[in-house]
Structure formats: structure tokens, C-alpha cells
Amino acid sequence: MSGLSIFRKLLLGALCVVAGGAAASETIELKMHSQIVESRPEAKYLQQFADDVAARSNGRLKINVFHAGSLGLKDADLLRIMQAGAVDMAMLYGEYFTRDAPELGVVYVQGAIRNPQQHLQLLPTMRAIYEEGYSKWRIHTVGGVVSPVFNVGVHCKEPVNSLAQLKGKKLRVWGSHLVGTFQGLDVAAQVIPQNSMYMALQTGVVDCAYYLSTVAKTVSIQEVAKYEAYMHPWAAVPWMFGVSDKAWSRLPKDLQTVLVEAGEAMWAKTRDAAVSPERENAAIEERKALGITMLEPFSQGDVSSFVAASDKAWADMAKSAGPKGTEYYQRMREAIAKLTP
Image 1 (cartoon, rainbow, N blue to C red):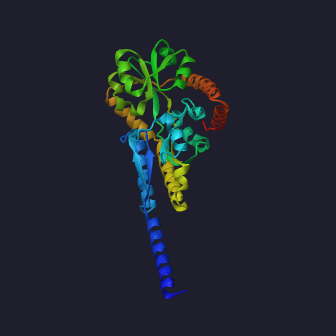
Image 2 (image 1 turned 180 degrees about the horizontal axis):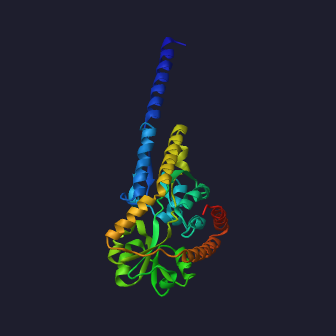
Image 3 (image 1 turned 180 degrees about the vertical axis):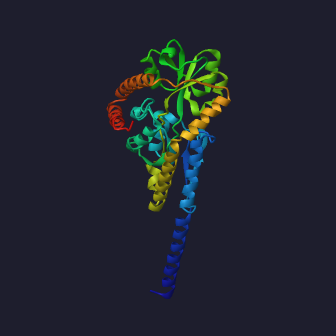
């Protein structure tokens, strides 16, 4: 072999090394869909997760978060979109996917817990179910956001703090399971979206609203419903961080590890902040200052009746979701049976 040929081979090898090094140092960018507006706490946590990924990867991996559905994706279609790899990442909320995966919409319901600490005890079972369910859609989960456990109350235009007083009233709720639950208690309930709730109360479409008391001021509920009675803690479905298998498979192993570690860190951070008596007590005082009259909470007897009606509606809903819905319901019920009172 001539000296010139050897030189050319050495030069070509050197160029390949340089090119390979450049490729390895290039930033990989992932698009992430989020349904929630930037002002919500969950959105701020999501941005912190993206910042953490950038820091842990020394800038080699960047997550571009598209808040408030700004990518134009419909939540009902999200599992199909993720399965096809048409978007890299997304915030996943099981109750949005009842069309394609009805079993994911029956994992957790209101009435499943009676004190906030029980929510934390149920998280491992809940997370395992969601991870299993999403994996069937070629979605890899990497932690997520544990939503705060807010107080849930009944907000009315006149004093109401018992199921007996609720009978004969028209009640706003946020989901079909709650319609079934209150129907089982002889209370007329209807689903009204959050952004229509104020007007429904103001115009008399409903007399009361079943709502997250801690954040009630954000929709100015104190202007149209002056009385509030606590009922139970919010059984808050967690947001999972999903990565399409297509996006996951093109990441080097070390960047896959970065995603996992950052996702776990955010899960742990939000789990530790999810239950906060101080936050709830401060919110109560704030609502009092806004003119809300805080009534005595619903009695333990009423709460027990609500829980029983909730479980019956839950079992019916799970059965209609098919074999997997029934399986998930049974797994959650087994976990609930082991809860510390």
C-alpha cells in the first residue's frame, strides 16, 4: 500500500471520529404536549422537570413543552397519537382516554379515600396500573406529577351541609361517576364544565356545586355561592409523563436514564407536597375573608353513605369498561381494604 493511500485512510478515520464526536454532542429535542395552562401548579412542575432534564444531560437533551394544548392535539386521540410516535412526549391523565381505553378512566374515583394520607398509600398501586395500561399503547412512563390533595366541598347559595338538605337541590358535578353516585343518594346531579359553573349558579340552573374548595376562589365561586361545607379529600388522578416508544428508542441509554431520574425526582417532590394541612387551613381562612360562610362539615354518617354510593357506581362503571376495567377496580379495592384509617 502506497504512503498516499495510508495517509488518505488515516485522514478519513480522523474525520469519522470528529464527525462522530460532533453527532454525540448534538442536542436532542423532544416535543411534549401538555393540556394545562401555564398558570397551574402542575404546569410549573412540568417546566421544572424539563429544566432538570436539560441540567442532568448537560444540555444534550431538551424538552420543549407546549402548554394548554398548543400543539393542537385532542386528548381523546392522544393514545393513538403517542402509539404512532406522532408526538414525542405528553402529560397523561387516565380519565381523558375513556373512548380508546375505558379501563384507564375507572382506576380512581371520588369517595375512594376518606383522609388525605390514604391517597399517598394508594399511589403505588395506581401508578403500577397506569404504567401497565399505557405500555399497551407503546408509551414508556417516566414518573410524573402527583396532584395536590385538595379539599372537596359542596358550595351552595343557601346553607346546606347534609345529604338530606341536598335532596331537592340541583347539584353541579364534574363527571359521570359522580352523577351515578349522587343519583344513588336521591340527589339530582348534572355534569357542568368548570368554565360554565359560575353562570349555572348565578342563573339558577343549579343550586349547589360540588367542587375543589381549595381553588374555588380562582373561579370566583364566592360571588354566587356564599355557603360551603367540607365533604372529603380529593381523589386526585396523577399526571404521568409519557414517552412514545419511537422517541424512547432513539435516545442513547444515558439520556434514557436522565429522563427516568428526572421523572422520579419530580414524582417524589410532588408526592411529598401533595398533602398539606397548612395549605388547606390557609385556604379556608382565605375563603372566609372573601365572604364564604364555612358550615360544619358533612357528618361521618353522610360521608359513609357517599362512599357506599360511590363504590356501587364505581363497580358498575368498571364492569361497563370490560374485563380490564373490572380487574383494575378489584386491584384498587384490594389496596383500599389495606388502608390505614
